[in-house]
Amino acid sequence: MSRVGVIVGIVVLSAVLSACAPTGAPVEDPPPLPAGTLVDYQLGQPYPPADGVGIVVRDRTAAPADGLYSICYVNAFQTQPGESDQWPEGTLLERDGEPVIDPDWPDERIVDTSTDENRRQIVRLVSAWIRGCAASGFRAVEFDNLDTFTRTDGALTIEDNLAVAEALVVVAHGAGLAAGQKNAAEFAADLRDAAGFDFAVAEECAAYGECATYTEVYGTQVIDIEYTDRLPRPFTSLCADEDTPAVTVLRDRGLSAPGAAEYAFETCTPG
Image 1 (tube, rainbow, N blue to C red):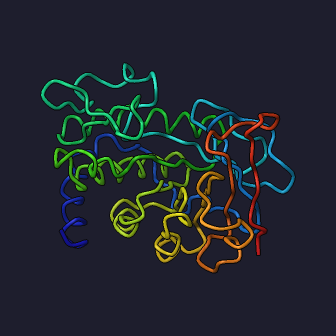
Image 2: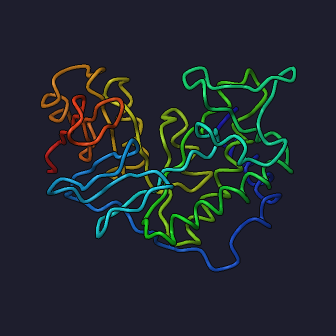
């Protein structure tokens, strides 16, 4: 489907979700990612950021980093491990009576965005998490697994997920938060144009050769996380590449805290 067709489809579907949008006026200019600072990605465990770090990403169940631009991680299209029972009945995708699981994350079930009623329930649940992020003091929110429709053999469509994404962005803006696309590089233009995302958080865009795909859409509003077990070349060389986002961090795959044997943290020097 063309980008025009996708956007037209989202306009129609988003009308169904209007009742889930916040009643207050949306924020016209949500807070952008601060320039000239470093980022740390702390989904594994929160800990005091290193000197010079100005952006910290933490899970929605954690507190934001005091005094820094904190981004709240929300897994909006799959369940977190052990949290399947938090989702309303019927909103988790099944095939032949069996749960549909992300093949790379066997303890995460895929959320079923295929019906109007499911989309309403999903937006209602995730909206509460978003507003909780804002109340805790986060400045932005990132939504993970926007591309679940690519892992369902046609059970879900891009229109289904983008309709939910657009509604969630409206809620985030209404709560005073910037809204971030997580991964899904090939859909970046649609996600920004149809859903209204403000920035992108990319994992391993250098390893997969996708960094320019994000920066062509979001410019400087891109965060990249590379991992020590899959570096395509030395990190200093990667940072010198003009396609690599200025806000890039190298972490260990488990996102461990300082003191752990596997802990790794290195950043590209902001220009």
